Image (cartoon, chains in turn orange, green):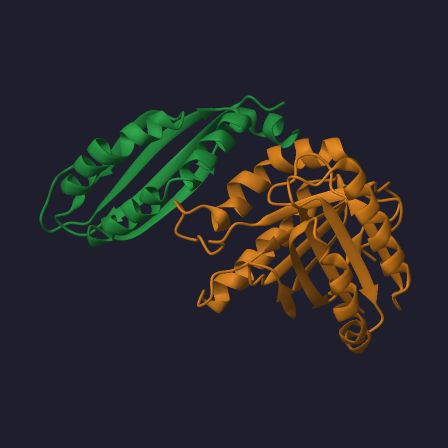
Length: 213
Length: 115
């Protein structure tokens, strides 16, 4: 499986009707792709550098994605789209709590500073993966390394989760000690472990289907 | 909502003969900004408790912040200030190693985890 994520940032002047029409157009374009699953959804309140529309495409292979994504990206580049962030990546194995509800998909795109020691990168990845063990509202999760990146930042990692609900993402996830005492040091310029030096893309949307499997 | 006090702990191993200069600069240059970001300086401990040209010292500086929301406010302000990273880089001439960790009182741990 090869996944593609696109985060569309609208021009601030875009009207409500233009935004709605854009999403309709992109949904039609996504349906025409040879994916095994996809969603196109407006982002929810609380995103940080998270844009206005989140697109998630699950292709059966990297070859299929490479064949189709250029045409799809051209659709995204409508005048109201100020810019698009995005990644393509071979989807790492996911973990889930299958009996729990999942209503919100969240992704964090990060760029680990080039030249960071391999051991530090692996420790960073290990810390991210500790989070679901402490935060029960994370009901599906996957950490992947980026194969190709589009937009203003050369993203290196995709950290995806599905949450039980929006309140859990805005509350339990942010407030839990595993977040601010273990994971956040990699993002904090005051900590010697600091490896994520560029602005992150923290974005999420409501979902009614499984994105992380 | 977790309003328990959070402690921000800087543990700094100074090069021999550098502890007093580091502490003086920390107090003069770092502490005012830390207070401005909403932290309360709890204490600065120096071990061994002597200024020596021959001994390394471990300087442990403890700040407190009231609750997780205040902690996020504090750290977000810091990240917008590129001078902070530069200040720590400037201190490298006095420092062998350092860490910054977060802590809480043992009695508060369950409340914090029940976020």
